[in-house]
Length: 247
Image (cartoon, rainbow, N blue to C red; front, side, top):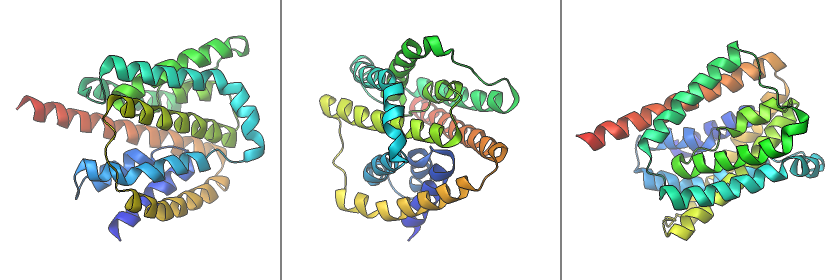
């Protein structure tokens, strides 16, 4: 019951702001189960909710054509990063990423939004994808620098959420492939993972319903607050890991 409630909450957060299901789930599940067991439960809900986030389907082809170079960069960056860094062991990198997420969220709420020039969108997208892939291979977090770049494209609210879903789906598949190549893909409890799809999808549906009824300024504020919370968690977890490894 408690595990199901975690996935309902994490799915609802993802439904509202388009990200956060794996990180929030791990943060809560790790309170009473080993991280490896929590990660095993996340496999199916994370992938399927990212695919669901690709809706509305009629606009997906246009989004894929626009961001195709970015997806190729994500795949290449993740595979190359996994080979170069040797896996998700970079505590210092995770700490830096968490601080960067918090800083970006604060700047997003208080500063001037990024704007990506249309004439440079192609090569900047591919470069951003490659950098995002490298960060994913090092930390397991898909957000930077992909999300700031996508926001700089000045997409509408639902277009932004769909674009994030596309990038997160690509990142999930690429990371899984990198771990498989390294021989580090854990044996997941597949049955339990698929059972957790039900509460995760229910929560995501509720979050999407709420997002459609939010005024744009409220959505924007929730989006950046969600990024700040995500960054805070990543940074605190990395600090705890670094402290425990040094003692």
